[in-house]
Length: 208
Image (tube, rainbow, N blue to C red; front, side, top):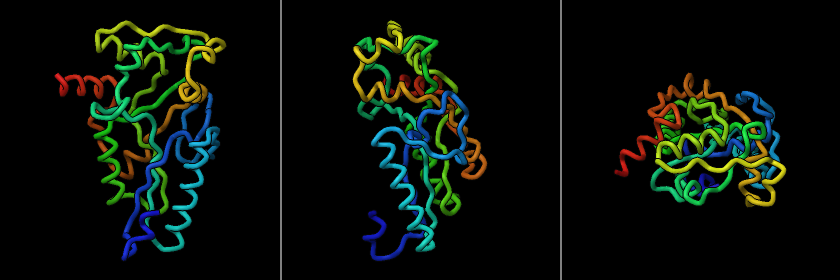
């Protein structure tokens, strides 16, 4: 960890983890007390990193905050908006097979990081996501309507393995709705973009 190479021990550390540590929750609401159940190699690495940095925080009396972050969207981030995927007409799952997905606008995430430095409790975990409760296909439908593009085709899960890359399939195998109550109450973050509609619309306005 970079903190260990500093000349002085930092007063606090904020680590950006992933919501993937929860694994598939079958669409349930998930708060920070849920036992992690990582399925992918990336998520397993993040679980290990969380454990190590929290142990380091306890052993050095350093205040460590863990932010569990879902899909980040931003205009200046590679793949940071749904537009490219919509232009390619990449399929999404049909409604009965679809999964819940979670999002955060990059500026709100940055503000959460700053607030965690000041207000995060020692060795505390925070879900950092907006208030949207949407399935993945509905998210892309919303974006398509906002951009004036065709909605993506819908396919059955049984046929997805033949049409979609493994990375995308891994996201389509996990369904959860993240509870951000702790973020709002303890970090006292007031989301500027509480829904993906407001966030994506703001990116369109800034890019026009």
